[in-house]
Each structure stands twice: as C-alpha cells, then as structure tokens.
Length: 58
Image 1 (tube, rainbow, N blue to C red):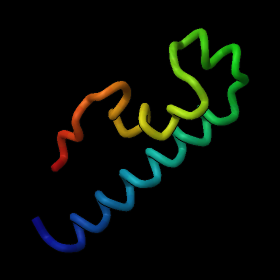
Image 2: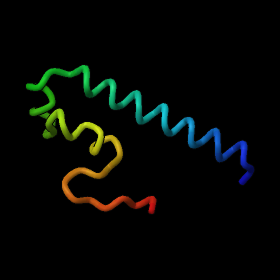
Image 3: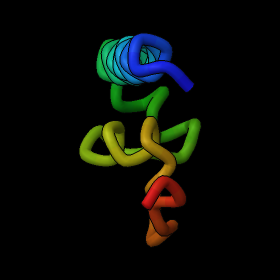
C-alpha cells in the first residue's frame, strides 16, 4: 500500500470517527440512555472499546 493511500485512509477514518462523536454528542441524555451508552462513553463507543473490549488494531 502506498504511503499516500495509507495517509488518506487514516485521515478518512479520523473524519468518520469525529463525525460519529459529534453526532452522538448532539443527542440528549435520554436518547443516549435509550441506546445504551452514557455521554462519557461516546469516544469509547465510536472506537469500539466499550465495556472492556480490547483494541483490535494493536
């Protein structure tokens, strides 16, 4: 894989995660509770690390 392709994928992944975080952060606490997460877990949920799951990337 070329360096440019890897850089693009990394940037794209960052943007997708950031958009997901912003979307969840904009929701009210009652809705977040309905879908089973707390406001403090948003970053973990977006990265797939909720409730003790290991980071599969490393």
